[in-house]
Amino acid sequence: MKRIFLFFCLLSGLAASAQTLVTEDDRVFSPVIKSVQLYPVGKESVLPVIALNSSEQLLLSFDEISNSSRTYNYTFQHCDAQWIPSKLTPLEYIAGFQDDRLRDYSYSSVTRKKYVHYELKFPDRSMMPKISGNYLLKVFEFDKDKPVLTRRFYVVNTRVSVAADIVASPNTALRETNQKVNFQLDYTGLPVSSAYNDIKVFIMQNARSPWGLMNLKPTMIRGTQLIYNDVNINDFAGGNEFRRFDTRTLRLNSERVERIYRDTANTVMLLTDRPRDKPNYTFLFDNNGKYFIGNQDGRDARTDGDYAHVYFNLAANKTDREGTAYVVGQFNNYQLNEQSKMSFDNLSNRFYTDISLKQGVYDYEYIWVDQSSKKVDRIMLEGTHFETENDYQLLVYFRPANARWDELVGYRLLNTGVKK
Image (cartoon, rainbow, N blue to C red; front, side, top):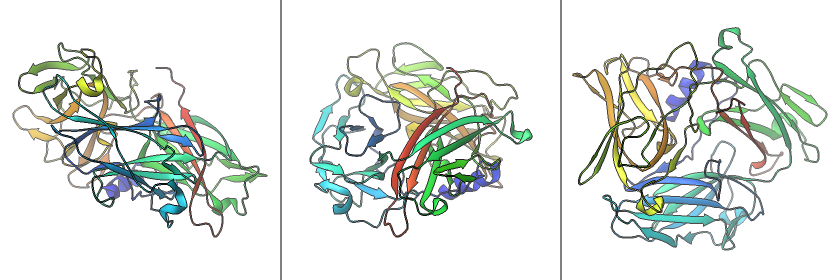
């Protein structure tokens, strides 16, 4: 599937810079594990980035659909800039124990779907990263090589400054649809022997790594400044604002909800969605693909938020003979798989699927895969506009000659500046 994403990027013109194909990713390997979230404590909408040797912590939370608890453990793996495991032993990048137990869990209450809610705050004194870089958190029951879930996080040791801005595409044909990121680095004090070989920068739009761009060479060097502004690099399709729905209450129909059934299980029917590939931009409030757990009818959504079968339906003006539609968002890690794949109903001429989701506010979008070419297209059903409000994450990596790992030495969050 990752090869399909890469193929799409190359065809669509998003991959003006060198591409990376990640090997370690956010995954859920057990069908009973739901609603996995990882973010800095107190900053639910932020990329999981913490400073090296700081008191900052990340919060992992997830549910297991079960009536009884299990003993889960965790560890983390250091990776290079392309998410390939580093050739380091755990002793070289972990201070303290090499794995530890999840001890914080609680049972759901007054919910139709019974589950156990788990939480973990890390790092702490028992287990802490020793070096900066990309890390993969692994939660497992018995064997750390057989995790039930994985999540990426970042440990930064800031040693470079990053200045950046977002402009319209210099390509006149893409000026109304694309957003170009120009930036420059200042590495004063960093022992760089070759700026063309020691430093690389990865850029993501809305934290979606499959569509990210790896910058290997600066456009020009001015003293200790590296400038990346070539007309052929970092030109992203702006996309469209995400669609969204709100299930924080299951007692009445709210945003984008057509009908709610409550019996032995909760069922939520969403309003019919239609293609948005229009030439003119329309403002919609969104959360840039994220989702947030919430329950307006309870006291603590972590344990009294219920699950519901949410039915998506899309009138795409296409059939399953032409291709396949997928519904994706942060809630399923934007993965194109059997769980996000939509079936086609010949009677209604619509694509549909249902996904079990916890109460909250969800962003989502539709992706089309052409039957003949197998091309993955995130524009055909959603459209793309320069005006779309997006976040961009810039991650700066440093690896001097003969070093054995990539350090994360800079991080910058950008926003297109369009007010929501």
